[in-house]
Image (tube, rainbow, N blue to C red; front, side, top):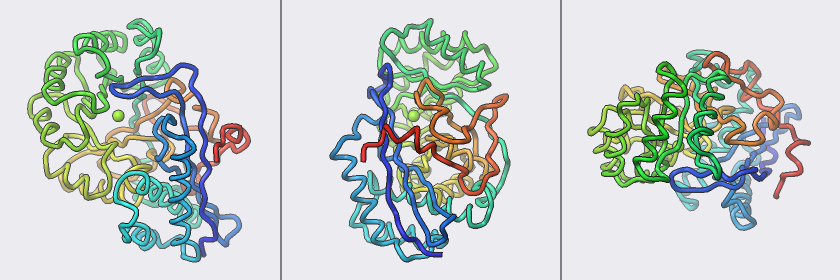
Length: 373
Ligand SMILES: [Mg+2]
């Protein structure tokens, strides 16, 4: 088999109300689909590239940068065998001209995911089985709890109750955009609304200095927090390690980390308790599996950041997959409208799809009005 074409389709749609985390406000959602065609007419790979955070920075200039990288990598890949995943990953990575983090690595990620989709379709196997097949169902949490105009404690509590109603046995909220005492109040309300048996996580999205994070953790500890995510800047391994040592709440991070080298440094710094690689950002399936093995050798668990459509396969494939992140309509207004077969939570779990590859069929007609390239 040979690769005949590589291109991307970029989509962006508005939110009815902007959502804010510890540092940023998002007015839009977006999606960057990477499509790889082969000389086998019935085998086309679909990948997702994480180059479009929140959609806000996705404008004419940044979508051109994304397209430019896709075009550049296409020049490397056309004519090669899509089943040679390692060779292709290294052919894209090795020249170093394009950088080892940032958008170029995010595009490599999307391409690598599409190549694994091709391998799954060729083998007629779902990706999670092809990669290891540890289980077919994984614990899942619903991410949300953003700050929004007109959303007070009552509305926040209602969102959490709705999450539990949708089948979640774990929920996550944002912290870091208001005073520590106000956030502790938000945590308290959420704990009360979900009861003692649902897990509760908090995510600061890098908003704190390490001493603020330590203060927050000290005040929030009594509400039984399952993890404290990205308390400080992603490169502040020492700060993360100090927080990790100072609190009984496990610290989690990794959504802004890249490649096995970045995760090696995080692990060696004893920075965090739980690793959160995002396959659409840090290097794709190929690199994710290496990080998962590195984590396993250090007795650390993986709780990936990012879209459930990819990560259901990656968590289900590995023995140290802790829990799956899940975005519902409160985070993405197009939830349930993008894919032919949407994933839903059943009794706290998401089941891995048994379709070949990633098993993703985009609803092209629904997406088309939002296309921007
Ligand atoms: Mg996060």
